[in-house]
Length: 281
Image (cartoon, rainbow, N blue to C red; front, side, top):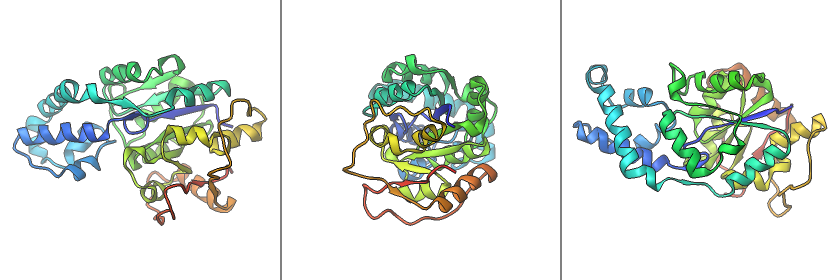
């Protein structure tokens, strides 16, 4: 059964991915490194230490890496942080989880200072049981450390936790920690990319997950355990999620738990409304 949900933050709960990419791109340029915006954007979700490796040499990182990270952080805080907004229905989703007795935690590649600001922007702090940031660990995403730090604080076994994230780095990190992941495409990753990474379900954003909550992997496990409450369900019949076969769902779930990095390829959905929900094992 699901006893906790661990959420990524940037791109999952707040609309910030483009802003982070711009801050990195501007900072790199200040150090004489020209980058393509979409290429930088595709690296958002990793920790800054790993992101820099995609654009800088080992020598550059050794000599300037710390200053580049510091300058990027200052630039983001000054010019971009005031523009960060939460995705719609976020607190409503968290309230729904609380009604079902599910603990909520955060696991983010952001620094703790940024995380504290994000909590104020979103208003989610009253719902949180635990949190972990890049300041809590030595290895950032896609290593499992950030999810494991949150899991240890929760004191709940990974098999009883579902992660929610918007990038393949979230999926890979959670899988290494023994958790399945629900994917959100609001951060900019395509459904095909998230499906190939191993997500057990896909939704557009937190509001979409809330709308179809009673058919989500979270509620599915609660139904099996007898703890799911249908009171307050926001589900409708107007856009029924596409159910895949139990065999496929079980296979992907087992691969998520067993393999540290999944490279399975999937096809694009037929339209933007299509969701892929793998029934619980």
